[in-house]
Image (cartoon, rainbow over all chains, first blue to last red; front, side, top):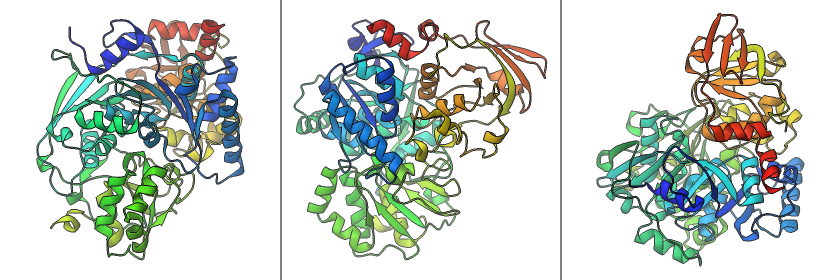
Length: 419
Length: 171
């Protein structure tokens, strides 16, 4: 019987012919920890009584969740990580390098067909370039560091067939928010989500990362896409590793097939306090905001900054609003400087912070006050997510965030993009 | 990190009942991730959801929650905080997958049962027997069967969690 992409990747990595539902022990191509989770990785690695990681080239640590350190306790974790990577002779992406999920593909560390685990739930991001990547806890990743293996239950796959012509002002973020609203926060729990169709084909690789990044918000184990010509070229530009794209068999068995026509999609908003609390922007009541945030592993890439600059060019951020921008990596930061994007954003009143996760995860760089409303390009709006349980977070595309910080209230970006 | 091997398989305690989609930011906010000290983490357990919880919880108590418990971040600090504050077992309709693995790995007993969750109320006295696969709501006088763990996971639990499993395989 035919196989799905994830059945094929888990079969090749376990050297067994496996189907959905089976539990396998599989070989890992890459393992990652970040500064929120690496403290326990290092502890668990020690408890396993292991001397060395399985492969120094296949493990990395990233300091992105609190970078640079806002507290001495965090500094202690960072120091522990720096000592560990030196001792183990593995790579470290220190403060300023960027968000882990931008770095792994951008640095060419992961390629199509790979099996990757990371101690961060948004590790699913690399599915956009045909990688089976999934988030796990620290002890699971420590087991990966130690042995180069971990166990997986082969997931069933839900296929999302996306077609139609993208309307102006509507982006991949709007589609994934719509899908999550449609399926609910646990609509794909334990499953793989496979995205195919003409509406995916026309997206840039960057825009595809946004979709794969957010599948965890409906419980999915991974969000996987085909390695088409665009992906293969993108990967070759970033990596020297050879790879073999993995596609599904024609008679592959799916748990469900869902169809989405993007032609009539509107910009979407996820309202507080759950990501599946989604409505079209045209159904939003007037909502004044005090902060806007553009960045994260979801939407901190060059084209995200570019669309924001296009909207904000020659305009000012509303006087009642703070607008915080975090490029997703140093590379993105530099490119945005070269392209003049940061000049436009800063002139409009934006505050640029170090590439990293801080504002999204509430560790520093823009914790909102009680009763404040924030519009953000991030992937989570849970209560307390940005560091204050008495603030409210609305999620949207970079264009919607840029339009909203101009007007001081949640604003449909289409009025700023009509030509 | 205590293993299952050392822990008992029966847990009895009072219920603290919560709703659906309890996420890890509610269980332990990211600003506390700078420590892996379980005692310190436990002081902030469920702070984002129910500030009074930590003052009401007693050793042996049981959290009962709806579907998708532990969704969100991969932070292992979440099950660590729950375990350390005295909770003996979490019963949910379903668990988010990363939390599910983390709980097994660190030795926090978890069981799934839709009906037991539906019937239970805060304050009920519940007895969970992992070996028999039963949940007994002593207050409501109702007995439920739990979903059995896959055999691979039973093996993991038998040797005492993932750390012991790796030690055994590599030792």
